[in-house]
Length: 268
Length: 276
Image 1 (cartoon, rainbow over the protein chains, first blue to last red):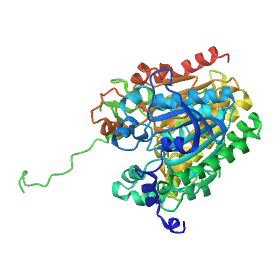
Image 2: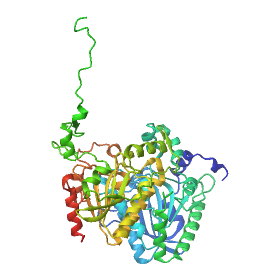
Image 3: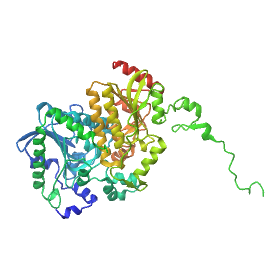
Image 4: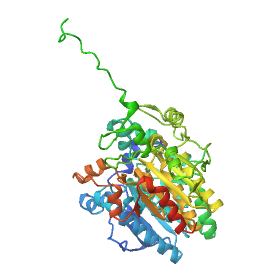
């Protein structure tokens, strides 16, 4: 563990993107006693880059949603490398509506390079889909626990990340823009990504001190991929603690606190 | 010295900038007084040039009715950000001095054909209209003021998206503004979004896209991802009309495209339908 504190933000980016890093499929397998996947946004299709369904975690029934990265090229092509299309965000909203209706907490796993920047995604309203989720999640009358478990890529991440509690794995990153993108725009030099990663303050430690996330979930030495089971148990423990805590609040208090939490961000 | 050996002298220059404006779209020369009278809409190609927030306020609200709110809320530098061109704080300070507004959105109370509203107008000249924490805070406070006064909220967007220099704090302004807008709607108050050139990235993916009505100016660039990024992703060239207001309307995300000259009366008409 002591070694990990010396990692640079750019090192952490590499861990967050590691091909063997546990993805949502792993978390479903390691974390859930049961999972019933629910498909489709009822408007266009079923996004394979953002999945969700009913899940039971440590005996607690929840609605679980999350970006899906694959393992290996074929699975990743199917999952679009975790880059969701508008129908993914709309499916997430549909499932969160069900969560509210059935009184289930939402657990949301964030792991995406960003929302898919494709022409079809634009045509179907990528911006509108994300925007509506932000609005909708801010008033949802059920607890929302977010786990940034890999890459928190900009609006595509935030589109399912407006939570009462936002947890972040020790070696996850969460950023307004990729370090490479920022480097090529502000430094006009894509090779300055390591510098951009440091300047953007995208690691769990930095985001905790900025008040953006609530808690850091520790990873085993070597990173989450070194011991997925241990990682999943740590995530499970943290998520269940958050749910238990949030369930003590009335739904009105819950929504009021969520509003207070996000409206205080960037108020200095 | 014969004439052909004479060093080329600078020809007598007509100070064209003083008399002529050049349409950024069709490059036509337009007499400046004509350009101003047309509120910077090109009489030849109908290009709607970008306006400053104060020009926009003057265009949309009854004369003298605008009262700025929260002028003291300005930019923040939570990351102490410095890039290749220097410190963000210095750049932001210079922008405040240049534009005379403290953030990329100017907010206030105003009247539109005597209907009281809360108005927010973004200014692209302020760091590309980027969504900083001060921008988000001003919009949230404007939304809360709309609820306090039971007035419609109108936001005119002009923005490239999030402000990278404020990193994750900028990203969170998307959630923050949308939370405030959701409350305005829950209070039964109208929220009208006007999308002007350009409305992209984090602003299109937050408050600009969730109006009761989304109204656009002709030909405004509206979209989530940048054209270059999309072309690189799909490895195809995109059509010229991609992400224009007209494209956005055809795909169902904008209610109406309204020429600049008619925007104020159109807004008033909508607000009367909404019961104001």
